[in-house]
Length: 214
Image (cartoon, rainbow, N blue to C red; front, side, top):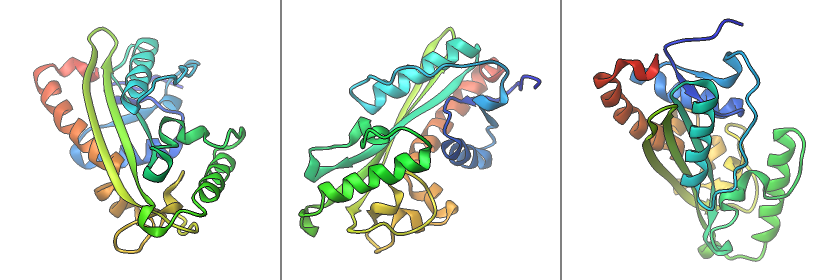
């Protein structure tokens, strides 16, 4: 596979995240590729940060140095008020289940529903959080942004779009996050907010230094 050039690298192995981020960036005129479009083996860093911001920065710097490219990385998850902010940075591995992403998502959702079983409706507030970092292999962290997308934890999963905890987050209009169309989700979601803020700042940086995405 020939190495792609002139594009922002999305530093994640999650194909659904790559699809979401690329779709949000495309109308803004920023081309992006995933790690799977580069030659080489890129081991994942240990995500041991205590905040979404710390993990996003660690991933962005890790892959920027490995690939020699400007990289964008995100760390995202669900904060549930009744659980003291859990699962938080442990959202992806909340149930402690290994295996395919779909199996992990199902186990995580099942655990959350079990833990929230006796929590009344008025105490089920929650939000998705997305922290994004853009790193350059020599200059380090260039950009940090954050987005949130709030609602309540439903009593059952609904919807087939999205991934992770999307089927459980109930919005103010009664729909679940997983019932939104891709276009609606990009416009409203935590990741959409963080990516658009990042893209605006990246455009300014590229205007002054075109080699950032070389």
